[in-house]
Amino acid sequence: MGNPIIMPEYSIRPVLPEDREWIRSFLVEHWGSDFVVVHETVFYPLKLPGFIALQGVERVGLITYLLSDPDCEIATLDSLTPSQGIGSALIDTVKTIAFRSGCRRLRLTTTNDNLRALHFYQKRGFILAALRPNAIEKTRKLKPIPLRGENGIPIRDEIDLEINLAD
Ligand SMILES: CC(C)(COP(=O)(O)OP(=O)(O)OC[C@H]1O[C@@H](n2cnc3c(N)ncnc32)[C@H](O)[C@@H]1OP(=O)(O)O)[C@@H](O)C(=O)NCCC(=O)NCCS
Image (cartoon, rainbow, N blue to C red; front, side, top):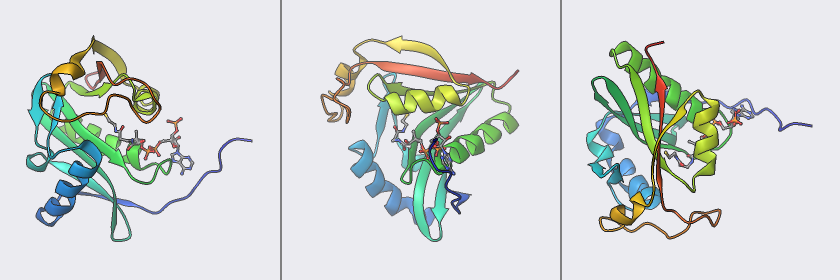
């Protein structure tokens, strides 16, 4: 028998000024700082546009992104209530924005240990676009990153994934 299908109620809305404090503490708790570093670039998600997923009044998901023609890059994606469709809905929302803004590519970077993210993105049409072996060594000079992921895999490499929006 497969997993039971949950019928959750949630809504998605753009990030608002009143979300700032929640986002700041969320980033520090889940990403170790209020900035993220990918491909040697520092992103401050608080300065980026984004969307929040809500269940009732509770914030249960966040995506932040950057439009930089011809790409749209996802800086962060987090869902606090797994397997209820929230991660997919946040991705779809940004994909629509990117397409309407004329972006040709939606891209993001994750790390080698994040098997859940690699599964999630590839099932949603993203392809592996680049591998940067040992990239996290440089990132560790800018912020603390655990040596191993939750699953015990050493956190070491960056992997870029992308989806072509022009097809
Ligand atoms: C990766 C991540 C964003 C996925 O978020 P999520 O909300 O669990 O994603 P979804 O619920 O849309 O999809 C997850 C699974 O639940 C299933 N699902 C979705 N809605 C469902 C429902 N109503 N009932 C049952 N299952 C459901 C989906 O089919 C999916 O399985 P699949 O990928 O095998 O198809 C989340 O695990 C996360 O926040 N991880 C930590 C942060 C992170 O790694 N972010 C990415 C860094 S780049």
